[in-house]
Length: 264
Image 1: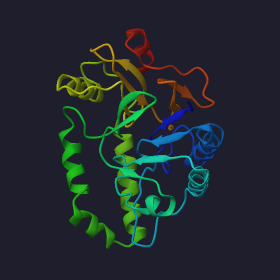
Image 2 (image 1 turned 90 degrees about the horizontal axis):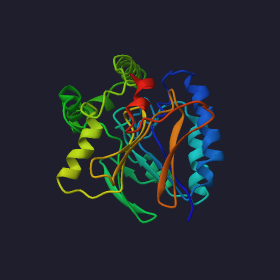
Image 3 (image 1 turned 45 degrees about the horizontal axis):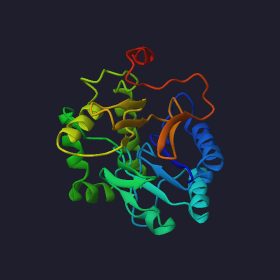
């Protein structure tokens, strides 16, 4: 039984603790060293800090990353791509070019005898009504059509400005506790509604989290991000472990309140 890898929130095009180019180079090395050895790869959204596919044009840049995932696909390794709140305007480019299926909603998978719910995680759980309203607007066909008619130089400038301001206004690296973490509350709510999963795996939250839920069976996994942690998940023999690529000394949030102190 081989390994399955999960990663999210690369935010290519956005500066983090490193430049986007440096992060992209590290990501390509990770793909060659880790993902290329896997039997399946899941990218859980916000791969790009912004993405819009015109009918015959895609955004400039990301050449190394696009080449790396092409090598993955050509090697016959199944790739699953989820959209996030920053790259929800990915349409059919990757499906047509590389045969990669695209997912916009949390989706169930069974792998290595484990039942999993996998998604990006945006717009789930209680609260954040402003974003949920904006998401409806951005997913509206009329909005997409109007953006299409903007000159790319104008459209991409507006989008990148908005995306950057959205990132700066968020305090993503504070763990607010099980009573307030909206994705954790979403997972608990799904269990109370009768859902039965071994793992509920998301990105979006930008924190590496491995949390045992109240049924003492299901684990909520968050894959963290590559702006700060270069974190990812590896499933082997039915068990998922969070790891960090060339980032020693990083820690994972768990049920132990002591693990929250580094993220408060």
